Image 1 (cartoon, rainbow, N blue to C red):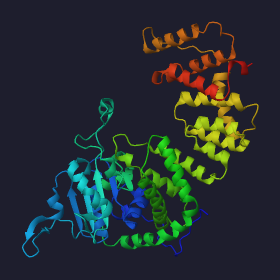
Image 2 (cartoon, rainbow, N blue to C red; image 1 turned 90 degrees about the horizontal axis):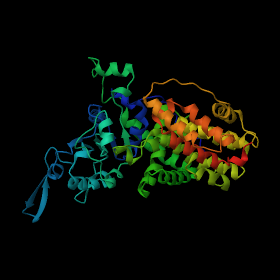
Image 3 (cartoon, rainbow, N blue to C red; image 1 turned 45 degrees about the vertical axis):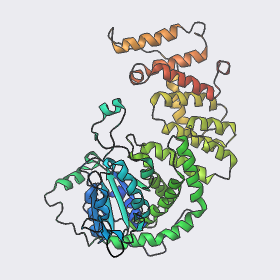
Length: 487
């Protein structure tokens, strides 16, 4: 069901559009760019100045032999797009008289600095980007509508102060405008390039080998476009369930999307998979194509705090599994739960097999990037499952290794100067320990104390020990660990 093969004898394997255009460090974006060109979908590039956004678009238009219009959206007026409105004596109506910069004969338009565009003009760009229309007139020659912007400056003063660079005047786009872009791509900066790519950027002869008409881009675009209907039919069995699951999980993760975005994502999965076949060959995984569609299809990427790729990848994996198990009611309930710790507890309550729970435990532990939470979850799950579940070694061993530091008798000596931050931390923790009157000999108190001692001082320099302890106590209760359950 998921093994899609090209009907053609694919000889275009392991090619790179951006490398052929002599754009360094963008090769991971090749499937996205090629997919957008093949299905003629608008694309928004987001990134700092000087990262080759405009250069890429100019070279793509040259390679496709398309007439291009490059507009600085911060400076243009509407007349720059449509021409001068003058009365026509013969028809007694207004006619737009074109200039060399008007949009009427363009095949590729690029709205640069779109986040600096006046709101009234942004509204007039909607029909051009989404419908290929201007003043209600269809732009028959226009195929590609791409835009670019700098990351908007954060409104939060703390984020503004901690940001390495920000752009005053670059404002978040109107959500309705951003939602017209199926692809929203964060572009690589200098620090994202390899040393070899950096050297290639600064080389004296960097552009001498660039041949814009000899890379076969038009043929590649046509090949991808031809594959799209075949792949769309092949993906029909599972793609709808995956997109529905993705949309539900995005809403749970405070990343709600429009119904339009759902259709865009489905179309993007298909187009990206077709582009990857043309670029890489037939032996590719649809799951990776779906992941790319999600990573580069979020309108929130154009916000001042874009969603992290780690969060989106975890969400994609959850949606992928949910789509595969949609007919199994127990699995559907488990995978519909966004919180991974609750997912493990629910799997146990619904009596899933040991091997299935082992897999969910492994995913939960590896996905948790907070050391205190990871340790606390490991202790809670080890205490809950070690004598009632036959867990796979891949799950049991990391639980046991992490839980050892809290469940084993603990004695530690830490030297720190008086009146230091560590001394203040220790005073707070010791105050909590001393206040647990009557609990000194109870197992749960010893576990909580050991948890705090293990984290002192390193963890509690960057995490609130009180908040972490409260979360640890909640996780213990989630997995049924109370005073009376411990001996």
